[in-house]
Length: 257
Image (cartoon, rainbow, N blue to C red; front, side, top):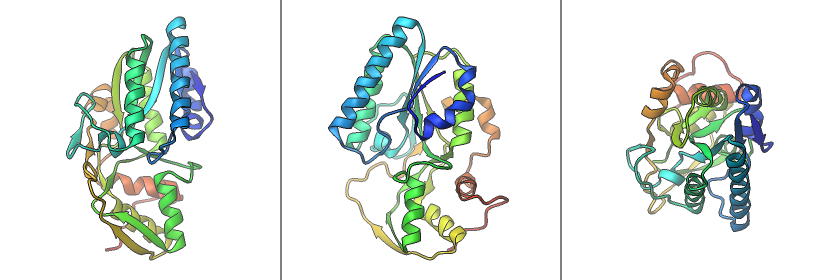
């Protein structure tokens, strides 16, 4: 696999790259759900267009990493399925959906993977869990009331991606997520308990936050990769992900009330 990019996802893909020589993975570009820079969006679009042109000429398959977050499925309350119409709720989601469309129209063999919130060592500080850990350490944390997030450990995500790439999939869009919507309040409680800190919580009511309670549908993923059913995804999985991120082992404790 040729991997374009040197960031969090790119580094974690390297161990399986040798297994997929006909694949080009675009693991560079905008990775911040609140990002709205037109220049950054344009650069990612140009990179995708150039790579799709090359893959079409060489007969290789392009892997594009999109998002299964509320940015993409923001107007959905309930299971967010790949084949259903979506109405992104911010510029990042609009941008990712537009790139998905451009790739589909490029004529290149491709696979679009909509990722949940990846968690793992050395990930960028602006991403969800590192940002929460930093806020907890500072003693005050802001929580959008009712918000949920689908956390998946990057190693588990790479295992699923590896299995998907081992199949002759072309033109498909697949959610790569745990399928469990963990409340951000529970995520914060667990992190605070593990870190031994009791931060002050500021709860924010966000107008028109539709979809904050959406869950990522994983039926298609599980049909393609039956192994997913044995990877521990479920209501307590997010706490195990957080423990792995913080370096704890063993069964997670009950969160602080």
